[in-house]
Amino acid sequence: MSQGSNFVDYVKICCRSGKGGAGSAHLHRDINTSKGGPDGGDGARGGHIVLKGNAQLWTLLHLKYRKHVIAGDGGNGEPALRTGKTGRDDILEVPLGTVARDAETGKVLFEITEDGETKILTHGGRGGLGNWHFKSATQQTPRFAQPGEPGKEEWMILELKVLADVGLVGFPNAGKSTLLSVVSAAKPEIADYAFTTLVPNLGIVSYRDSKSFIMADIPGIIEGASKGKGLGFRFLRHIERNAVLLFMVPADTSRTIAEEYQILLNELEAYNPELMHKPRVLAITKSDLLDEELTQEMAKDLPKIPHIFISSVAQKGITELKDLLWKAINS
Image (spheres, rainbow, N blue to C red):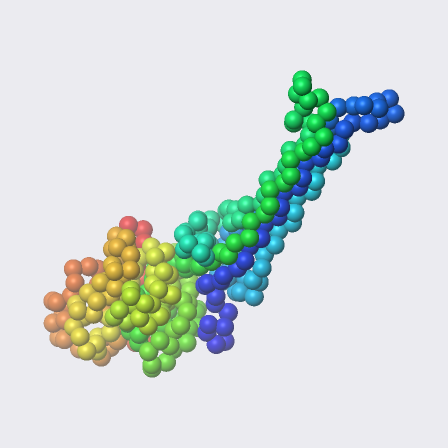
């Protein structure tokens, strides 16, 4: 399956909520009453546009081609103090980690983080009051009622931030996709050129005693990504929702490992300083190219965080890496 074909993490939709029903101005009449008082019921509220979290979804693909979301109008009030029929809500199911923002102002409205959680994206108009609300000692038969409020029409942006226990952070071709394919059943596209991965890939990593955790392979960072270079903000936002960051630096890098790690760290800090508080683990990949002496020499200059030399192809250090990550997740 070609990647990118079914992963959608950004949609822009036009939401139109329902208008509220008008209140009734009816006056009571029956076989025994020729001049009764007001008995007009209230109009009902218009339908809302609602977002609902669904843990079984992982993409916004189902909303990609649905540009207009329209809720039902509220029913008008009826005689005998009967309220109108509530407008039909339009409920959009979204994956966990979906952020809703106003398309015009860019303001974040809320985010959905729990299965079954519901939040109103666009409120329906309120129903108008019936004429019985306006009766008084001096106005015993009001012949008017309140109209319903109009619905709202606004453009909204839905963005998905992938939820995972471990996020893989590194330059293009650092071996992130290869690691994910080795430790999980995921099948990311792997090739010897930059930006092979264009969308995040998720994999479930099996651990000891039937435990498991979720790993996210995020497209490679380049210097200047926090300013929008490369794939820029499109994938940096996915890093925000990961519990642990696994920095991956290849052993054959042209810079020193400490320099490359620092560049990655600077990009994350420039994008969102809060990312600095997340637990970090450093993995030096492609270490099957190194002998024991060179490994010990390189270890002296590594940053002072938990680190490990691994090789996905040679299956070297994979079990120890899982131990490190599990400890970081549960610390």
